[in-house]
Structure formats: structure tokens, C-alpha cells
Image (tube, rainbow, N blue to C red; front, side):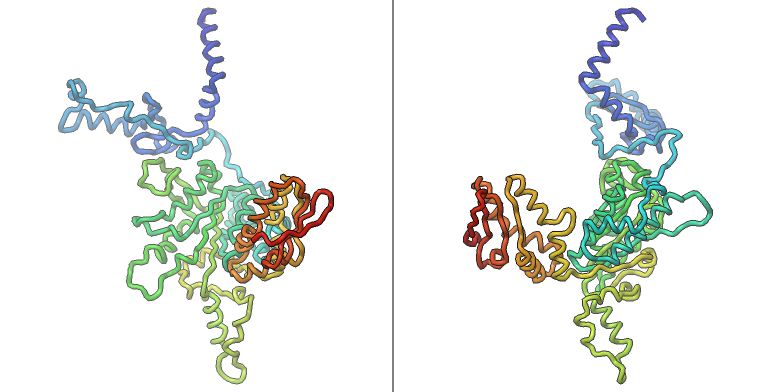
Length: 477
């Protein structure tokens, strides 16, 4: 190489470094090429043929194209040279595959590593202690989840160690709305630092009907794992509103979003290889497909199961309904822990098929929230809603305080709404609106104390000025 050529090459590399072209190339190297025609990734279709405008075609599709051109009824190769006839316009086929539709490459010789190292896997009591920092109450649910997750990731880590195969510990959690089902799962995934996909069972339908296919839940997990198949195969899928796919009673119509969806989910829960689209919910979209093994994916299903209490009450009162030892019909009407007496037979009677229940070995319930628990939720968790507002006002150098009477008043209002912890946010947003609007106007305000009278619309908050002067303002509402 001459000195002139060497200097030119150095200049080109410098320009690329300045424009970021080198970083882009390195970043693109992390992802697999996808065939423009059949949408198969490089790991399945084999080595790709690069065409202009970033188009890649696999050998099979290229060969089929040549065969069609030479063996068809019309010799397309002859049409190529005809004036005014354009068979193949490369600019029309410019492929712009977004990052979310690209698959991560598997490095050669790289061993599959478990996401959670068995040596560093926290013990169940430590997992529960971490959950305690964010979730108030639900002691039994937190204990059951901690043990199930601990056993599951031990199973993943010891996958090929011996001949004894540990069963999957899929979970079914039952609890009223606002009791913290989704929040528990989100907190758990964040603590373990594993990919999590949260999906809604109400959108799932039988294959071939409008709605999401059953495999779309795995597609969401793949997206959460940055399209890394090995990472996704050790993640957690939380399917909410699972009670909405129960068998429909007294209907002659085809049940495309009920029992058939449960049956379609059986293979996912058990563990099987499913072909899923990358970056889309439907296989019909022009996106690459990849195979994901659900054997080590932990499935957690949750639902409110309305009217399940009546099924449990009916079973309990039937057990001793005749004679002197008979229970009164209204004995269980005021029982707040009635859900904890649930059995698999009750869930089957609700509309879940036996095969589905059998793949959920761990079933536990969450209690409805009482007034005392709601007060704790307001102030105790690490990211409690009151702490969030205190931080917002602290940025304006104003201290926010709540009296015990105010907290009780908020909890009482939330109990009337009967939507669990979700009601707290709505109530606080309502009375904090005027405070958040008025406080930034006056720089002399140093502290705001929310009182019981203000919550109940009988007075206003106590405003303390920076000079320690206290003044009670009228009701802003």
C-alpha cells in the first residue's frame, strides 16, 4: 500500500468516526439479518445475500426467483430487456426494518447463562422483605410468591444438572380489584431484574378471529427482552383479567374468547416451542418469525373473579344445611376472608377448565383492603403517594404534611368507592389540585398541612409562612 492510499484510508476512518458510522455498524452487527421475501432470520434461513438499499435475501428465495424466471410459462429474463417494462425496481423495495423487529445475534460458542445466578438468588425471606418495602399487607400472597419464584429460578439454573426434572411453579392469584395483584408482579420483576410482559386476557381470541393470538403474550415478552430469545425464555409473563376467559354459561354462540382461549394457552403454560412474530402481535404481518421455548417462562395469572364468593358460600352452606348442626344461610355473608377458603372445584365451577387449573399448581388469594391498610398504603411504602406529593412540593421548597385525621378521612372516602388502592389516587388528586395550583404563586409559603376538615369540605388546609406565621385559609374547593 502506498503512502497516499494509507493516508486516504486513515482520512475515511476518521470521517466515519466523526459521523458515528462506525458505532452504527457495530450496533447493527448485534442483530440478525432478515430475508426480505420469507421474513426468516439468518439463524434459521442461513447466510443472506446482500442487495443494494440494505435488502437481504436468503439463498432459498433467491433460487426460487431464478427458477420462476427461467422455468415459467413466460421467460421473464427476456422481458428484462424490453423497453418500457420494469420487472424489479430496487428503490421500491428499500427495506427499513425497525430495531424492534430485529433479532439479537447469538454469539458462536457462547453458553446459555441463567439470568438469575443460583449463588446470588435471594432466599424467599429476602424476596418477601423486599416486597414488604413496597406492598402493604397481603402477607400470605407475598410469602407464596417469594417461595414460588425462588423455586422457579432454582429450576432454571439447575436445568441440566441431573435427571430429576422440577415442575414449573405457575401461579394463579385471586383478589378483588385494587388489592395489588399487578403491583406485586411489577415489584417482583424489578427486584429480580428479569424481563416482564404484562398482558390482558380480554384481548385474546381463538386463532383466526379478530383480536390478539394467544402467542402474542410471548411476543410482548420477547420485546421486553430486547428481542433476545434466550433472555425472553427465562422471563415472567403476567396475564391479568384471567377470569374474563372463563367458559360462558347458557350461551349457544361460539365462545371464541372463553374456553377456546384457555385450551390454546395449555401448551404455553406447560412448556412448548411456539413460533412468534417479532415486533407485532399477528403472524400475518410482514415481520420476521422466531421460535421461543416457554418451558422456563414463569406464568402468573391474576383476576378478580367476581361472584366467586357466592360459589364458595354456596358450597360451604351445602356441607351442613340439614339438622340441628346446620349453618345459617347468612353465616358467611360478613366473612371478609371468604376468598381464602377457595378450592380448585370452586374455580372450575366459575368457568375455568380443569386442564388449565392443573397447570397452575400455586393458587393463592389477596384480601380486600380495609381502612387501616389504606392508611398504611398512603404513607408507608417506599414510593407511597403522599411521599410523591411531598417530593413535588419540596421542589418548590414547601413542606407538605398530613394530620392523622386527614389520612383516616381519605381512607374512609376510598372505602366507599370500593375500588381498592386505586381510589386513593383519585381522591388525593381531587383535593391537591387547588394546592398545587396556588402554592407556586406565593414564595412566602413554607409549609402546608392537610387537615381532616379540608378533606371533608368543612374547612381549609393550614398554611405556615416562612416567618413561622400560621394562617388557616378557607376551603379551596
